[in-house]
Length: 294
Image 1 (cartoon, rainbow, N blue to C red):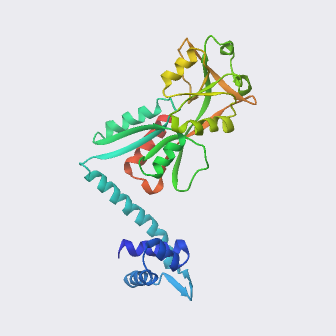
Image 2: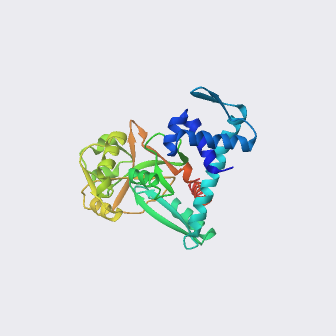
């Protein structure tokens, strides 16, 4: 029994006909038919009932198809992990995180993982929401810690980690810094500072304008240090995501909860990784990350 025969069967079932399956697999229709017939002969059972130009699954075919999805996924994962380990004898775990995240949970999870698996190279990348998403699509990242900005996809594992609240960092000399909380409308005449690289500036501004509701001028900084210097010199305010209870000691910058319609403005943080790129190290790290956020 060959993996290729199983893949042909899956392609026929998922496309609903032999022609589209042949196009997907880059072979002829007769080749797919012959390989599925060989698979049936080897199993000693009929998987498909042919009806002129259509087909239906037999009960045995339905069972075999469902189980084959698990089998082929496990085999592809095994191949990926074996090739990774063969690369200088070391495995690599590539993690990305949203540039607006400033918590300690990620570093705690990385420290725990590295202590348990010292032979695994952990590579860390910071980026915008879309940069992280496209990196996972291109398979240059294994897992991303990100806020949720789109509906969950069935192609991904979507592990909800925590809910954050948005706070506003503002110069302690600004009159609004004495407020116990700030409404979005209070900030309309003050520039909003976002920490983001040039490629992601428009995307980030659109999100804070259309989803969060912040209006007015937007300024950009490459680093948190640059952003806080802008705050201290009275150039604007910075929205930050806070998870859990965090003590704030900076006397030059005030951190104030952001409200919208008298309710705290929140985000949902998740760990995302593609189902077809899942593996032991990815899933173990995701579990460690979840523990650190709990």
